[in-house]
Length: 209
Image (cartoon, rainbow, N blue to C red; front, side):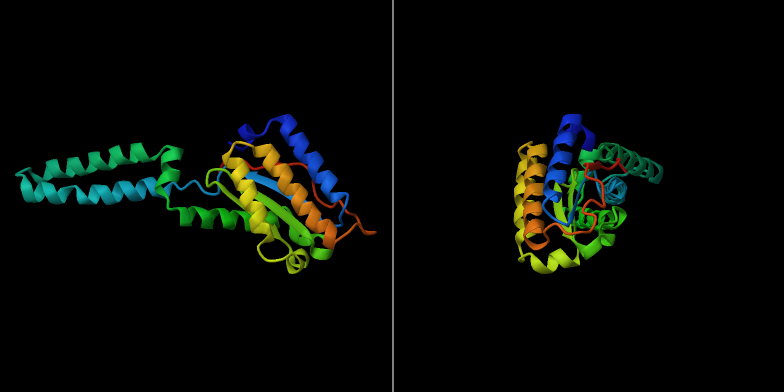
């Protein structure tokens, strides 16, 4: 899913935007897209189990079916509901928004560590993260930059990025977010004598789980 959103030329444009933003700051920007933050495979089994457990009660109360028939109806219901709920779009729909947001937030924090943003000189790394299936965007900043940027700044950028993704403007949305993050980094952390390009400048697209 992540690869389908960005062509090779799109990824090149995003890489150029990161390089340009980092030229004006000693901070680091990493852009990551995840097709999904969880498989949510438990959801179809959970729903199928709950519905199958409810099936016997009306049959016991209002029919004279033998227990073997009721059991077969229960098994058939479980299999039918499971088959309906297994496709990815249905799975995502079955999971509450709150849970999907929590999973995407956890994946963003994981990527902050995996991409070594916590090891940058000056603690000025910033992650711009998108989880496509959950329609969730997040900016995670290291301690030094987080302490200087006004509260609510990242959320404003995230809101614009999410709106761009919803409108299908994936690349332009990412580039604008990178430029805005870069502007804040440049304001608080101008270029210094240290290596200002410690991490990759290209868009990182994660594999499907």
